[in-house]
Image 1 (cartoon, rainbow, N blue to C red):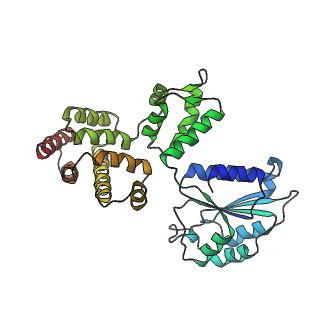
Image 2: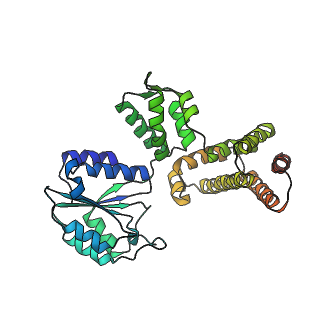
Image 3: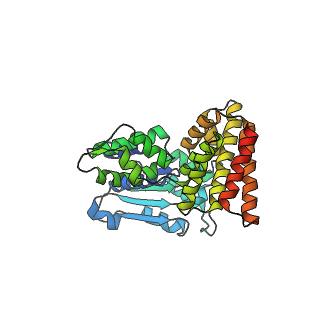
Length: 341
């Protein structure tokens, strides 16, 4: 189930004894945690809510707490954070756990305890016996990154609840500047609501003024200028990045990464893979794949390879010579433009 469904269920239906919140979106993980906290009256939380980081705390200690009776209350709530022993690999330096302890608990869950595993991972290792046992018992809640459409809807609903709405183009600008990352969108929403307090309308100008473009977004504009052989605009964008204290090597590295993504998306699209399948294979945010697909339809694979190789050469020159980075980038633009003709 998703987070809105979880919130509704916790209000209206009987509570399960074990939950698994699985996914890498930290904002959704936090929203799930806050939803579970509503199960325990605020005055009881000191005694009846516990949280354990399983990369630092023995599983035996955490489960012993889960088996304890509620203290002057009807229910205990126990969070097990970062259960990396359920994945294919564990974090370096993390505590080694005995999975059999969790299997034993799952066979006989404590009736008066709600046990919540907060697993900030893309997936668990389904081959492990403990994972199979968990999947049978636990109610799974998704904290996977939201697709662009879901992120838009969630942010719009959050604003509407507080009496605000986005003017035409404002949400598009927010999506563009955050790469449709739900966590980032939520981080900036409070500032946007505060700024729009009097009019209760979030404007495109407000988004542009309060939400800075990421390096990836600025570089995406630069990629478009390079591919369209708009040398003057490309140089202006490059100089703006330098003026914003971005290092030439970092700019070049992001450019190389962007062209690598375009090449990968182009190849997979030519093989007939869908947008969602490409996203899963490349393990990048769906919005980046969407933009990449829109871009690569206009260009041949050869042009993308030439641009990437030219930037790799530029990177080598940046590391091995003292020549001016802006001059090196200009030389790359000239050479790429000649090759693309």
